[in-house]
Amino acid sequence: NPTISSKSLLFVHTPLKQHDQIWRSQMCWGQKLEGFEGQKSVYITTEELKQLGIIGVFSGHDHKNDYCGEENGVMFCYGRVTGYRGYGGGKKRGGRVVEIG
Image (tube, rainbow, N blue to C red; front, side, top):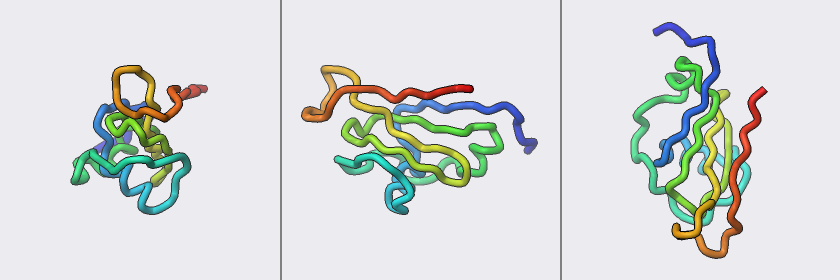
C-alpha cells in the first residue's frame, strides 16, 4: 500500500481501541471520568492510519472523557461534552479546537 502524502483528520463517534490503550499507557493528558465503551478490538492499526495520512482521530460517545494522547505520531482525542441533552452532568460544556496550519 502506498503512503498518502496529504495529512488528514478522522472524526468518528465511537472511539477506536487506541483511545483506551493510550489511557492505559498513561501517555496522555486530560480526564477520564467513565469507562471505555468503544471498539473492543483493533480494526485498523495506528500504522495503517499513518499510511492513510491520518494524523489525528477525534471521537465522542464516552461523554465524560476528555483526554488526548499520541501513539506513533497519531493523536487520539476525545471531544468534550457540548450539547445539553446528553449525559455528562457536572462537566463543563465546551469543545476541542483543532488548529490547521
